[in-house]
Amino acid sequence: MLQPTPPLATTHEILPPGDDALQSEVLAWQDTLVRERRMAANTVEAYGRDLRQFLLHRQARHGTLGIADLIGLKPRDLRGFMAARRGEGIGGRSLMRALAGLRSFAKHLEREGHGTVAALGGVRSPKVERRLPRPIPIKAARAMTDVDLRAGETRDPWILARDAAVLALLYGSGLRISEALGLARRDAPLPGVESVTVTGKGDKQRMVPILPVVAEAVAAYVVTCPHPLPPDGPLFVGAKGGPLSPRIIQYAVAAMRGGLGLPDTATPHALRHSFATHLLGRQGELRAIQELLGHASLSTTQLYTKVDAARLMDAFDHAHPRAGSTVTRRAPDSAGRSQAR
Image (cartoon, rainbow, N blue to C red; front, side, top):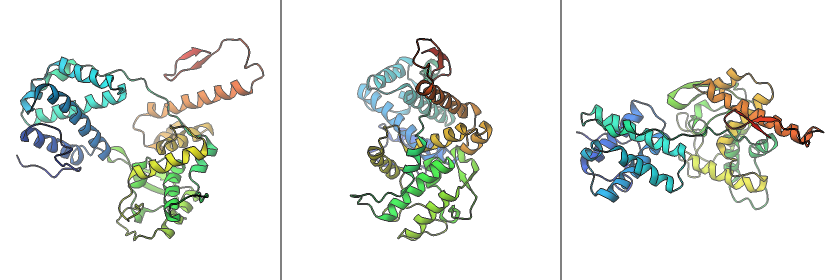
């Protein structure tokens, strides 16, 4: 079969091990995920990485791999891989994603007429405890969106303005980092713009509000950016003028954490959590927050009610004159159940 144009970088160094037929099907599968399933590039990359890890695991035990080797897998082979990954410290959430990627590739092989990977039907997905989002306190979230020209700062002022504008969109409009970096210059939320349309997961579009302070941060970046910003090009660019990588923003936030006294959980995505939690704490309506975040399910948004409940319990512990008594009360745990305190 003809080898499709890969959606991601696919050199022989990062392709999974296996014969030519297997590698060709991997490329075709990734191409399908992007072009037909319209999966996010990060998800496709993660699925490909998980598949490569599984095939490396199999190759170490059985040598060169082909499609027939995958069709003939036994449930114990998959359980052995999962056990090995757990032994490396990989958590249940990552293992669940790895299993989902393997199942996706197996379905692709079946559609292409290679047969069914029956072993996948005999393996249960690992149990994953749903973790509560970990928002950033209001004062720190505001500080993260300010342009900081502190002593010793070596980055150019326009880069500081760019990072502040991106973070302002995450906290002020609840965007995912991929949504902010996916904005085109023609859609820049500048002063006078009250809302902007963003493309989220599954290529779903939604309209989000733009606060004046966010628009001013974007304008400050656009004015100072030394690179051309054509209308159809990306709004946010890197130091050399190319598309801005999410990792650059992640590194910038990591550098801020020390100065602000924040834990490692203070990430760019935590600003999106903060957007939702702070809105809810000020009586924001849950359905409206769901729409603003672009959640497909209300149950996902409802996690923020548990975060707010935990925050109220903490405030009670610190403020109520009887909070230090020996009376046993119950507070919600991470799954929403009550537990003695």
